Amino acid sequence: MSAIAIREVRPGDYSQVAKLVELAFGDRGEAELVSSLRDHNDVVLELVGLIADVPVGHILFSRVKVTGDHASDAVALAPLAVLPDFQKQGVGSLLIKAAHQILADKAETLSFVLGDPAYYTKFGYDRQRAAGFESVYQGEYLQALAFADTPSAGTLHYSPAFGSL
Ligand SMILES: CC(C)(COP(=O)(O)OP(=O)(O)OC[C@H]1O[C@@H](n2cnc3c(N)ncnc32)[C@H](O)[C@@H]1OP(=O)(O)O)[C@@H](O)C(=O)NCCC(=O)NCCS
Image (cartoon, rainbow, N blue to C red; front, side, top):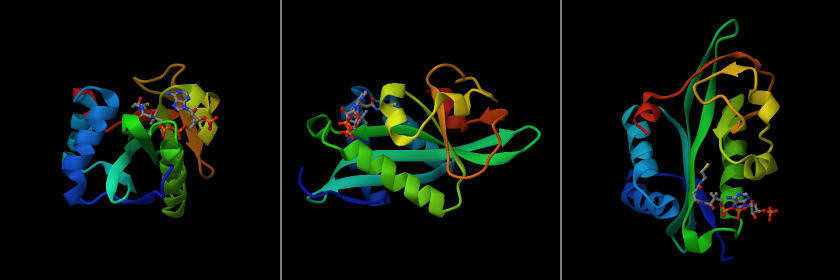
């Protein structure tokens, strides 16, 4: 794979990112989610991976509120997208690892993902770490990764942007 540069998304990237996400997923739903998360001001971190200055991968983390005995903030990874021609070449891995480092540096403590455990366990996500939380997404695909000491129970509140998915 050619050299990849990873940086935070800028407004000038929005249209290319929308096309990338649509091409990766094969429909507009996830691109609309990205736009809606921005509109709701719920984006915590959004990175783009570029090869020769062209976006080939994108990752977004949005705010999740955890309520209960130990109220706290968490993040949710969604969506993650790599252009079809660049998949299975490590772009997704680089984006996830870079994002986790930035999130930990920003003192974020807990990340959730709803996705294929065969993929996300490679990056430390764990089904058991998520099992104690109440969520509309609770089930075998909900996994979590802690960057620090955090609660293992509570109720998860995702951005309203997910409601329109
Ligand atoms: C899923 C996706 C983001 C992965 O990105 P990628 O750049 O192709 O992934 P990588 O090359 O970094 O793969 C890392 C590892 O995961 C494996 N992998 C890739 N896609 C996988 C998948 N869908 N399921 C399970 N394992 C997968 C790779 O074989 C590789 O394994 P290895 O480390 O043992 O070699 C990308 O395929 C994509 O955009 N798919 C369409 C959109 C989508 O489904 N997004 C995820 C929604 S939860």
